[in-house]
Image 1 (cartoon, rainbow, N blue to C red):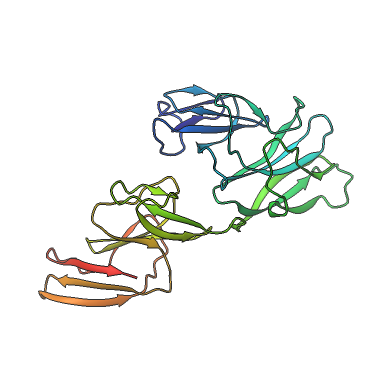
Image 2 (cartoon, rainbow, N blue to C red):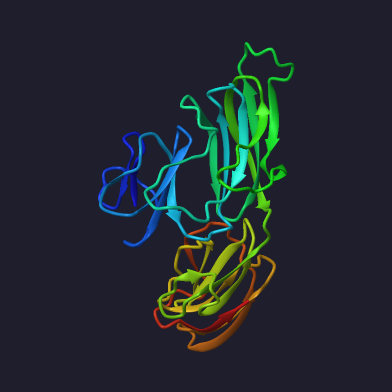
Length: 286
């Protein structure tokens, strides 16, 4: 999926524009705009969802984990409001307003968190503001997660110059369990296939392959586990030793080893048996 944020188009045919994510041809897409409105539509070659898009992603009906953080200025009063909400059900292609409805309202800050993560932002007021404290922190986890129609809580009555994300913390909803389909490799929460583990914010996925390689990656709830040559897939535990049995090609010996993974690079495979053409891995597991 690609997006043209300024002109307001999304689709899989906009290959000259910004790439967002992989998705299927039957996925629903949610798009939020600078004016505080959003809509959900079916992905297509090219779809108009409104100009000045600030966030776009795949939307799943009934998703109570993905949590959106919003700070907007109300055009009528000039006050800044913050809200924390889910979008679990909608009417497709209908426009929804997340503000109090004034046409001059606009978004000051927006973030989407797939597992209800906590978040701290810094609020900077305008230099000419009469407020005594012109820079202060705001903690989204102190807000209850409500429906999209909630107006939000007042952040400040003074004009806001800038909102900056300072820190994203652990999930406020707790860890989430994932499985992967042992045929397609598709990651799911439906208890379909092989259990991967319970993942919280920051937890990573470990995959080990019969080529004698391992890879650490971020868990992608809508992604896949690479099935070719796969021996093991599960939650990465840095202090858990990997036990391996492999054939060493040069000496023609079967070897046993235990080791800790000390690399931190994600999305890259690392070899842990010899490079000889006859070397091959029999077994490996934490």
